[in-house]
Image (cartoon, rainbow, N blue to C red; front, side):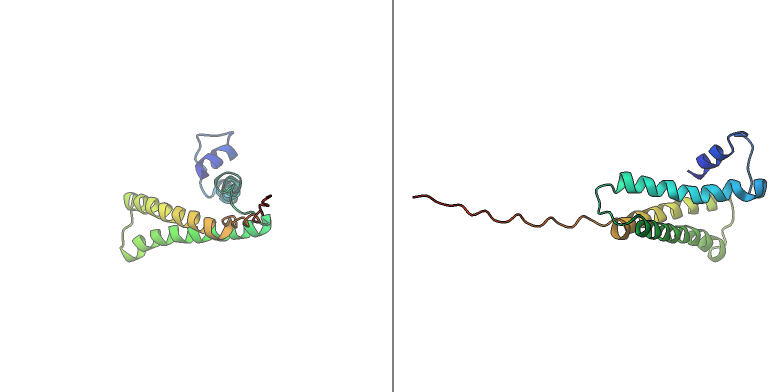
Length: 135
């Protein structure tokens, strides 16, 4: 998603690599904040559309906190392999990023389902109807 947003942002030069030093870093910083916002809208109006809704500010704060925790999970997997196992290289980094992305995606889905968009409370039972018997 970040690659798509970065290409959209730099649509004038789609085949030129935009490194972190190009364009004062805006090529990386803007998608970093735009991507979770687009993901929030997709989750709120598509994935969890049948779940209980509360205020947008509460949902937004919790959603971005959950995304931050997911980012920490992903980066901790990368840090574990680099600093504890001593594996530094393209292949090991890519494998760990796939594993970290999977773990953080599972965490984000579970925590959004549990804390951000909770299940609908059960509907109260309908009052019992009295049947009148005529003799």
